[in-house]
Image (tube, rainbow, N blue to C red; front, side, top):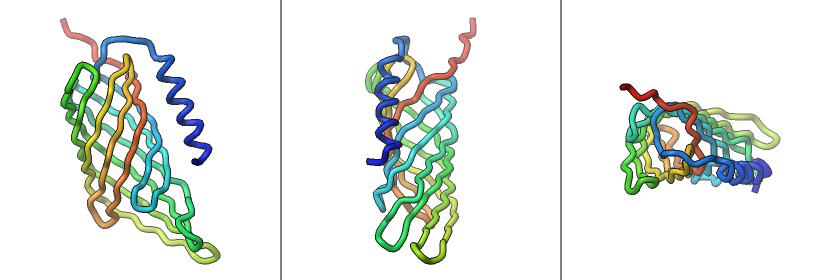
Length: 173
């Protein structure tokens, strides 16, 4: 496992122990980070996201996932950069556990680096689809998602991570 993910796992576990308890909510601004696995070639990357939730069920925002160059076989390496704008509608099954469909738009950039030869690059827009789950832990929640990209550069990903609440909308009196 790459060193990046060993330290990321330590960070996530440490962070979860430091988070104080509060009422669980998805309203306001949230930021998240976590490792991601690309399923076609089994390469690892890192996902970051900023989301806004106008209410407890709906949230949306941009994400970026970066997969640095990794060896696919003896002949070439692959790097992927994904820019996404996704939306979730969360179905709360319990006070802390929710399930959500994922949809959005995607821009993918795939680079192949042939060993001892030339480089190639493909760019394409696509549509995101998927399903996720999350579990609330005070001011944060852990999540797991499956996401597919439909388009010229079809791909599938699994991402897990933690989201922290940055702000909460003020209550109107």
